[in-house]
Length: 108
Length: 114
Image (cartoon, rainbow over all chains, first blue to last red; front, side, top):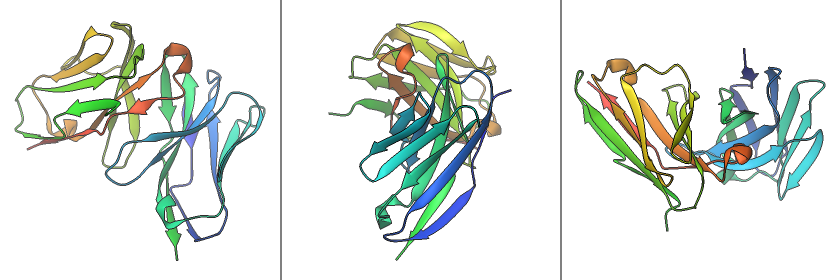
């Protein structure tokens, strides 16, 4: 089957760095995406890794290691507005398979 | 301009009723999707369409019937609603099937079945 595992909750303070891990079990994924969802809002695309290594987009970076079936999202210089749920998602032909989401709480 | 829009935003109805949710995207994308997000925030693919053609049906009960009159619209009709159908339904689109990793989501429709 296809499944992705993430921690359910992470707490950090403003200005800190936080890493949200994602491990997956599937042979069919050809890349890993990350989405952010604020309470009551829609998921929004953050980043995508098709190849092993680090992708950087401003304060957010994402990493993928295919050999370890593992990826992470790194958020730097945390701000209160970063409090949200973060989902990793595996790309399978014609669809995304989402992890169960990690709720990030940023404290002052 | 809203990229992906859905109507209605809220839908409260009784068991056994039939209801529809409409979705439109003005991004010129070829591929559209329906997702169901349950109370634990688990987001699950239901259907995907490419240029009006169904390409993914994730073992959804046949009470759910999607319809794509053109590639900018993907509607979802639900027959004989059940309590377990209560959830937030999101429509999404991507440029095409090869860019399914980058999807643009609508605001969601919160369906409550009583």
